[in-house]
Each structure stands twice: as C-alpha cells, then as structure tokens.
Image (tube, rainbow, N blue to C red):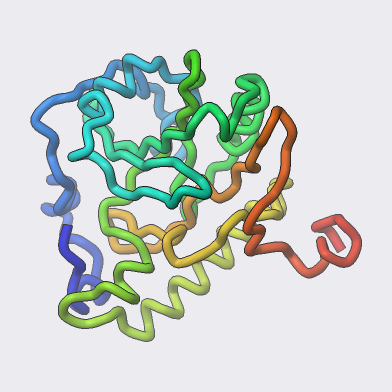
Length: 236
C-alpha cells in the first residue's frame, strides 16, 4: 500500500469507502471460522484461535501477507489475514524461544486482551499450539506513523495530524495505566497505526511483556509513567 498524501489526513474516508473497507487489500483465499463473537464497540470478544483458523486467514502464513518483520534480535513477523466473517486481522507470529512457557504466554495474552479502547488496536485473540505462539489484533489498514513520517511519497503528514497523534496516543497510554498496564515496551513510530478512518491508534502488541526461559523480563521499555519510576505504582 502506497503512502497517503496530505489529503488523507484532512478528512476520514467517505461512508461509501467505509462500507467497502477503504483501500484494504483483498486476499484471493484464506477464510477462517473463528472471531464471530462481537463485544462492546464492535470489537470481537477476546478468544483463543486454532492454528488452522489462522493458517486459513493468512493463506498458510504466506509471505504475500506479511505487513512487517522485526530484526534478528527479536524475530517475529506480522501478517494480515481475513476471517470467515470478513473481518480483517493482524497476526503476530513469535518463535517458541521467545515464549517457551505456553501458560505464561496465554496468561499474558489474556491480560492484554481485557483492554478495550478506541485509541488502541485491540488484541482480540491468541493461539498457543505446539511450538506456535501467535497474537491476533484488529487490523489497521492505513500504515504506520513511521511510514508517513519517514517514507512518504507526496507530502508528509500535517501538523494538525501530528498533534492528534500525540493526543490520541497519550489517551491510550493513560487508559492502559488506569487498567493496570502502565508499562509499554518499545514505544516508537512503528507502534502507532492508522485505522480505516485515518485515526491513529496504539498497537496492543507493545503491552505484552517479553519472556525468556519461562521468566518475564523487559527489553526496550520505552514508556514508563514518571510516577511509576518514583514509587513503582502508577497511582499517585
């Protein structure tokens, strides 16, 4: 998907475009059966997906469906996918070595999955099948803040949108803090995603702790509330 010009940031998609799903790509195949239950605000209820569900949704984790890849230090890949109910999803695939303890992975996913906010790209499920460790989130079709800041083709985003990004992400972090998730890992421009209306949202993937040898540890902890640094408690 090419980077949007400045007109993208002036107004949301039309109602007609929203019904069509905007400029979302449409895979030719790959239909899953899970993800039908819808909770408050139209966001699916958090649930466990089967590996077959996610294979079908991503065309067996086809390289054509990759939307982002990380480096060698934290090998994981994010795919786009489409469920049988036509909902688009983002699937983050970890290596087993990143989460050797399946129970710890499931518990952490359920913890993040309780969060629901309009400023988040909400986590809607997970899969822990054999060596597979996968997270499922709402799919954001309009790229990342990093792309619009650093890889734009026509015109970078306007200052009004930059201020909106700062406000919306602050709201997302404030909500996470009040819900017992004050720490955000690796906060950067790639963690800010734009939804079908062109509004910025914070990726829920950064709320997951990392794990190694079955023990929790934190790396690249880019956002910590100042009151948490002072007393280890988000509440003053």
